Image (cartoon, rainbow, N blue to C red; front, side, top):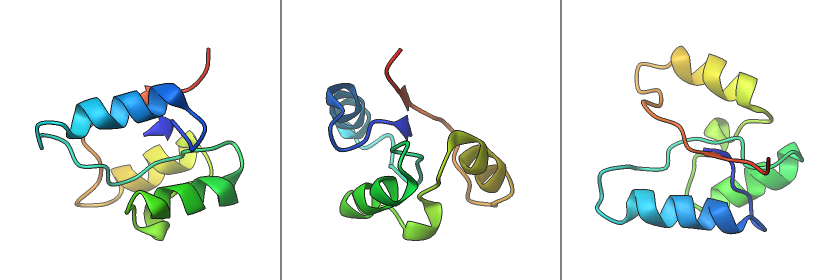
Length: 79
């Protein structure tokens, strides 16, 4: 997930919809423009801290290199 941090209404909606039928699992994200706040939020959601990224570029680069990397992304940013 890109965006969708703690104060994001659309992030909550995206997560709820994606997880509703157990088709998707939230594995990684760049949740907040403030990297530490995003990491803490991701951990509260159950995301491994190593997969909570400071920005979307790091998210995409690191996940692309993982054999178990993400297969889809939800963009929940303002504008």
